[in-house]
Image 1 (tube, rainbow, N blue to C red):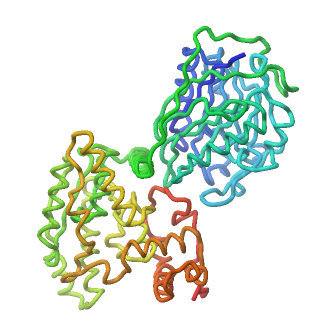
Image 2: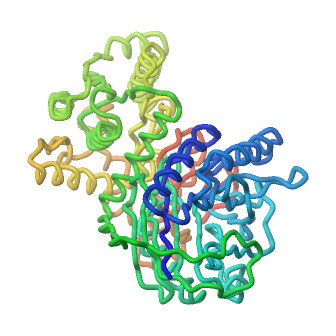
Image 3: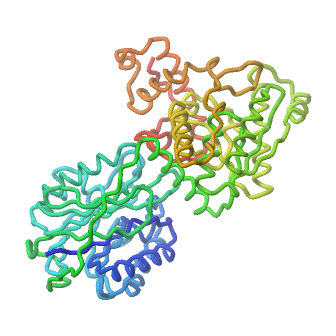
Length: 555
């Protein structure tokens, strides 16, 4: 027999119980009209995800449970819906899914394995479940797991496999990371073979603070062969007909025994996998767009210097929001080169974003005329005047300021506090400098292939990076060449290799000492940096938590 599943790959907003419920009702109705028998929604779709310490707030717990009861009455009673939400037992919060049918909740399942690594703090926020759930729907015994449950060998999936379900459904809130799509497919394939049952893996989309969810929902048959796969970073309802076995288990709840027939079978779709640069670009665009719109901003503002970092951030913002919502300011000082303004103007002309020039030299002179500074302190006045200018315009016009620093700079502390580090969001903070160049070339190539004007000036890509805070300044005056620096940073920051391991890996000892010193001294700066889209496995922030005050040294 075949069941038609509807996988609702949607973008909830944390705390918007009414708005999220409306999305569920709409998609369930759409699924029912398309002949689906089961509509599947992401992990904690009703509350949004992750809710962090909102899970511990009694008022939020009660509101979630109440919203679920109301939602059950609103969903078309002819379709079974699997909906993620926050529940509580005597004030103890649980990450759960509800099985809704006939206008009421028929069964509930609590997530058994709680991730407590990287960006996850679920031991802090939830109480784990301890039992499997099998529900009979149209004679098919459907097992349910939630996200992390699927990743743990020998855990709840082993117990579920022993119950011999005819179909397994797994709602997820799985954040995007580079190359994670291949890891997911391998996992889903392996678990389906373990269960000897087809498996439907549904993931949410959209941005939440520094996380972004890419969808990439997957359905495989009982042998693990791929049947259908949804596009990354796209909302929608994926319909798929799945061959299932009936009455394979002893269910906990029976919803319906009657078998069903599908009059017009569907041809499933398998979305084309995205390349590395396209995945990163779409992830940052999605994260930026949702941070702006979900927080009630209508426009963004950035300093457009003519350099590669600000150019890439501007291009990302234009793709995320449209040029009419992106405003840029060039702020030259006496050290700014003529081509910097020309490159910034070229970028504005190519993309249509709003652009103006504000000379800062008189402001810098007024400051240094009152406060005697020299050397680096004097140089950084320029960056802080620029930051103050941007924040003033933000206050005046309601724009969200975008910080333009990349992961290489953030790692090494190569930024000025309250200067070029100011902003409400930092789109490329988890992108190393070499990746910034790769993204710029990729985005221009895509534009040219589509017959459009390349958004990023070629000169911004090819010229040597410089903060332009003193005559003939270059980034290489303060940092190793980026191609080499990024290799060391990836090993030290992303892979946690220490001093000895880095040298054993072939890096020069003096280089290792220099880079480790810069990274370790900059922790206090990173703590003050704005949030930004996570795309790597080890982003600064929740992924990598180190004390600012520490006497430990790798050297």
